[in-house]
Length: 70
Length: 320
Image (cartoon, rainbow over all chains, first blue to last red; front, side, top):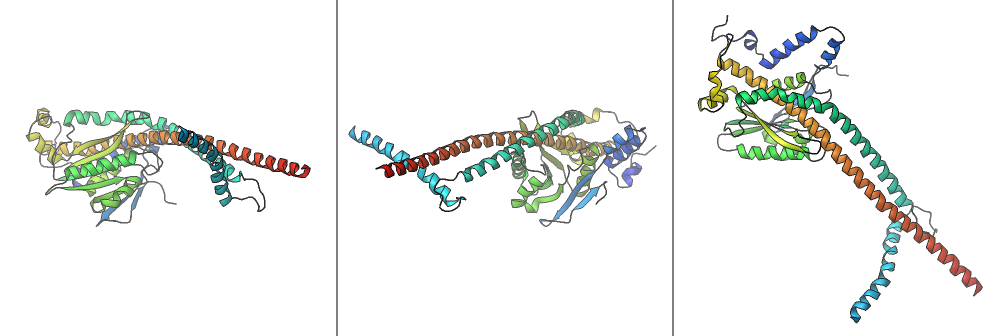
């Protein structure tokens, strides 16, 4: 299907393999029935605060979170 | 002989004089009894005993909490070891690889009171930094957790690339760590990633460990020089992908798995270290309480004795 030089569509769109596999895993988790579905979806929650450092100074941290900010 | 006997006599006289004096003077300096009362107050010692007892209760409770959290996370950490073992079997772990751009990922905790694990991680990171420094080479830090950030800010400010906190707000799961790994991969250029964490061996032993993940280009280079990576060519590749692509996918996935395992193991070590730290502090509080009780009783008995002496000498003065 793909020639040796072509990359898969997701790589061309700028995603890494990790993002690709996470999306696939999310699709699989959504295929479950209740109550396993809610259990599995709790395993997907993401929350952390990352801040890039420029010139020995931390920039404002961006919070990557699935939970709503209160 | 005579001198020794004299010295012994002196000590016998000196000892009872010395012991009440410091107690009395220190108590009078902080005495809280009203002026004019002539007995020695035990209030100060009693307050100290109460606060030490409260602290002991708190540390005991913290130990229980840490023990229960440890139980919950330990099975997950041991199960996650199976994630990266196939990678090590395939690609080998090469701590001694010599590359131009090293990125050191230091994993630490956000909360304190967990013993010395964060300091050991930081110490190993700094040693790694010195080891991989050299002409044309650069080493950068990516810091997970507040404690390592606080320690590394002091002398390695200019080498920090990213710092990540609030990782443990939700229970740790693979999705979170993989998003984190993705962020790191996108923001940082690297030839080799060195992940430093505390591996959990048992409740009392956590050893600082380093895992190395190489970037796909370096894997290609090492494959040419033979060794484990050189055998990669003997594998057949299915699908329409090239070897370079597969290596890239593998490298990203390997980093994500190794990081997941490292974060879990470090969390286990953190809870274990907190358990033993709280345990030893409860024990110290207990010993402190024993010593304070002895002081309290001594002061109490001394004050009773002085009262008795005053009463008796007053009574005998009246009679005589």
